[in-house]
Image (cartoon, rainbow, N blue to C red; front, side, top):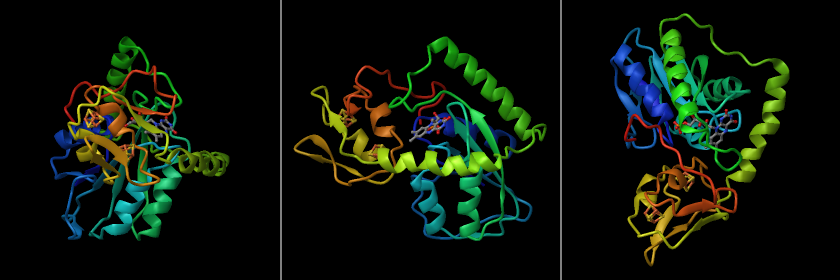
Length: 245
Ligand SMILES: Cc1cc2nc3c(=O)[nH]c(=O)nc-3n(C[C@H](O)[C@H](O)[C@H](O)COP(=O)(O)O)c2cc1C
Ligand code: SF4
Ligand code: SF4
């Protein structure tokens, strides 16, 4: 079973690649409606694929594991895609699994293109291509068992708590704006994993004070009408090129 959570397609691509090697159910955490427990077959590993979020995992992922039951989970392999550096992402994920009574995961970091355009520039196209090739190569090594799991050092774990604290500052939805190119298609409303956006008089309005801050609405608006304060006004938008997630 492969559970994935993706905003701009990197983690979705990884989940698809895993499925080629381990044919199993591919479940989008943001779309599944099931209230039933997830039951694994004897010997079946549970894969978790998500993106690094301020050296941890996002609130949506934590909440997903709080809300769902799992049966017969003996081995968890987690692949966390990131822009550059996982930091304490392994420790955060494993804390969350422990709280929910699940076994410790073997965590692997997978650097891909960063979509966090609030604080970073998007890398040039040629660099992105190199990055995708390197990520595919590394993923193959991970799945072939040729790479040891990522383990953050003690001081990284400590510092990670501080880094992840920034997430709680940036999660506020107040800075989101919509410019006049918006044509009220409603894609941002449909895409938002936590239903934070509504169309009011043909304009997206953020109904929740905080959100998961996944940036899916911002990156996937067909006319790039959504911005986050002044941070993203001149920034390009990103989506993994090989899929239509
Ligand atoms: C809210 C947020 C926080 C992020 N924090 C980090 C980070 O701390 N370190 C990092 O290397 N990448 C970080 N990133 C970049 C993503 O982890 C990376 O681009 C990821 O591959 C995106 O996956 P996706 O396309 O499946 O959404 C962050 C992205 C978002 C949206
Ligand atoms: S996705 Fe973009 S164009 Fe469509 S409603 Fe949202 S902001 Fe407007
Ligand atoms: S409002 Fe945008 S950034 Fe926030 S959770 Fe929804 S899609 Fe993600």
